[in-house]
View 1 (cartoon, helix red, strand yellow):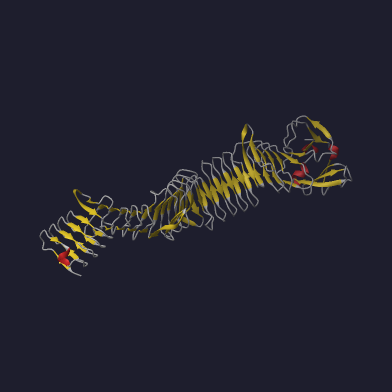
View 2 (cartoon, rainbow, N blue to C red):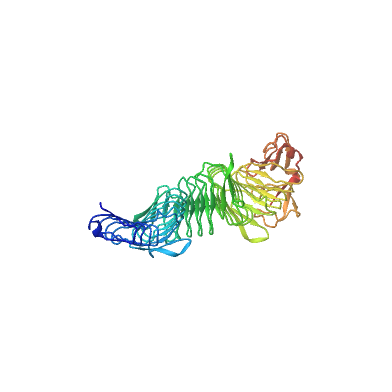
Length: 576
C-alpha cells in the first residue's frame, strides 16, 4: 500500500503520485493541501492547513486535521474523523457543515460523507439520509441519525441519541445514556432489557439498543420496559404502559391515561396529565401507599420509599396493604390480603379484592366493592346521617336526593354520629350505629348489631336466625318486632312511635302487652306452653319469640344477661 506524504508546502497530491488504482495513505502535513484519493479504500489526512480532500471512489477514511477543510468523500461509504480535536464540534452531515463552538467564523465543509467520529468534548452530530455510522466518543454527546438505517455510538459520557427514521442500532456506551423516539408518530414497543424496539404494524423491522439507560417515547400508546439500571423512562403523549424493571427508576407517563409499574427498586413515578395508574401487584407486599402525600413505604424497610406524583389510581399487593387516595376520583385496588383502603375526597372506585378488607370511601360519591372475604366499610368520618342498605347496595344521604354510594360485596358497616338507618343483607353482618339514635336491621344471617351511643332501635324481622345485640341499654334502646313476627302479638298503640323505617311508612307502633312478656332464668320459648309472646332468658340474654298460631318457638336475639335482667315489655315494639 503506497504512502504519499506532502512536504509541508501547499501540495497537490493526485492518484498518479500513489500508483493510480491502488489503495493509498495520503498525508498532507502542514500546508494548504489538495489531496485526491482514487478508487481504493483510501486513508487521507490533511494535516494542518486549510485543505481540500477528495476520497474518490471506495470506502475512504478522511481526517482533515487542524484547519478549516473541505472534505468530499466521493463515491462509497466514507468516514471523517475529528478524534484529533479537543472539541467540541457541531457536525451536520445533512447540511455538510462542521462548526466549532467558540469560533463563530470558521467551519469545515463536508460532501458525500456517511460516517463521522466526534471528539472528546460534548459534540452535536447529525446524520443525513444515508446509512450513517456516528461516533460520539468521550463527552456528553447529542447524536441524531436522521433518516437511514444508522449505527450510532455514544462512547463514554452521558449521551442523548435520536435514531431518526430508519431501523437503527443505538449503542450508548459508558455513561448514563438516553435515546428518544419523540420524533416518531408512534406507537413503539421498547424493551431496554432485551434491547429491542419494535413498531406495531411492522412485523419485520426493529431498532437495536445497547447500553441505553433512558428512553423517551412517542405521542402514541407506547409500551416501554426498563432494565436493571436506574432508568428514566418518559412515555410522552398517549396512553402508555411503562415498567421500570429493577433499579431506582424515574418514570414519567406524560399526557394520557398511563399505566406505570415501577418494578423492584425505589422509584419516582410521575403520571403527568391524564388518569394514571401505578401497580405494585408484582411486589410480595405489603405496602403503605398514600396518594395524597405521594409516599409509598414498605413495612420492614424504614429507609426506602417510592415517590408518587400525579397518580390517580393504584393497585396493591397480595399482602395486607394500606392504601389512601387523594382529592382526585381514584380507583384503588387492594388485591389479595386484608387491606385498609381510604378513598379520600373524590368520587372513588374502591376494590378490596380477596381478603377481609376495611374500606373507607371518604367524601364523595363512591363505589365500594369488598370482593371476596368478610369486608367492612365505614362512614364514621361523615357527620351523618346515612341510610345504608347492604341488600340493595345503596347508601343515601338524607337532604341530598341525587347522590349515593354504591356497595358491592360488603358484609359489615360502621355508621355515623347521626341518626342512621342501617340494613344488612343475607350475610352474617356486623353493623355499628355509632353515636345518634340509630335504627339497625341485620336482615338475614347471624348478625352482630351494635347501636353505640344514643337511643337505638334494633329491628328483628326474621325468625330463622339469631342476632346478637352487643350493647342493648335499658331503657334507652328498643327492639322492633317486624310485621313478619307479630301475627299473634297484642298490645297498646303508642302514637309516639312513628315513622320507623325499614319500609314501615309513617305508622303507629304498639308496645308489647305486658301479658305477653315473660322473663326468667333459663327461660326458653314454649316453656310456658303455647302462649304467644316474648321470652327473655336472664341467665344468658337469649330472646325467644313464641307463636301460638303455629305452635313454634324461635330464638331471635341475644342481648346479654345484664341487659336481659333489666328488660320490660316496654322495650319491645311491634306492628311496624
